Image (cartoon, rainbow, N blue to C red):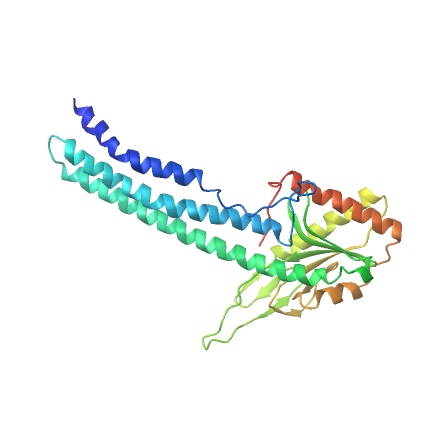
Length: 304
């Protein structure tokens, strides 16, 4: 029976299939998320959403790195089995098996390169988010009770990196990480010009970070007014760690800063006055809102 010549070589694929099943079962072996021993709720740190995203990126890298060799060997192993059971040798068929393995090697090389670049971007974003988070933590101290900082606050469609509450307003703080280019002689170019509708970096420009920060601050202002029953002064802050900022026209309601001495800049900025009652209502509302991300971790992912 001719069909047996194609069915019997599948026996040689069973060990590879078993290895693939083990790899898939172990893909989520590393999970850095921890829960509080007091109330079993997930513990959150600055950049926690990016940490979770980084864990998933490493799981994908592990999956592609481990499954790649198994799947690329599968056509060759099957072809060797075909050579044992075939009644006559067909060199075109053997060439097809070799070509298929070659294509799979190229595909998984591309996937590994993509995963490496993705992890690199997330790590850069996480490093900048942590640096800004540490700077914001300086606002919180026993002597400065009116200051409060939240991390990874979900909106309806996105996540706000940080929300800082001072006695004089609420600040929506977004962090963007961008790699600084070099000149031909090896000098680093780290100057970005802020224009009313875009950021002009050396060699390219972007408008999405400005729009996203303004959209987040407008959303939070409207949401807090609805929850607290009165207007709350809110301002957007876009931080670009490691960059020197040159302003040629910052949009209204937005600060663009490098993030250095951010706590001092926010504590000195006067948007208005929050009385004690409004201050406490704002904090309670944001505590409630931040808890939604714990109940639904897949709500959204931060931009980088």
